[in-house]
Image (cartoon, rainbow, N blue to C red; front, side):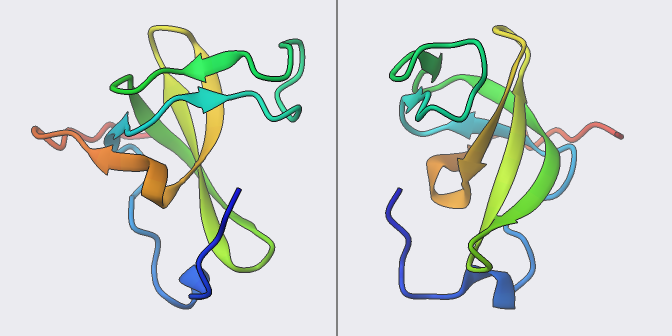
Length: 93
């Protein structure tokens, strides 16, 4: 995981709880997702999910917990790995 020099958490999160997002790249298990092999594809480019949690990584970047409904996986993603869907639906959590 490569982070920019910018300290992202100095600003508000890019996405809100309940935001409907699309993943911009394949997300593979880096060893932190239990029960799946390292390298297992947790989400493929274009998968749709909803933000269900917002945390931080190394006090620098936001990590968004995204629930991908089709696979039923909840995966941590960086903001740069996500984009809002065109219809920008949100759900109440």
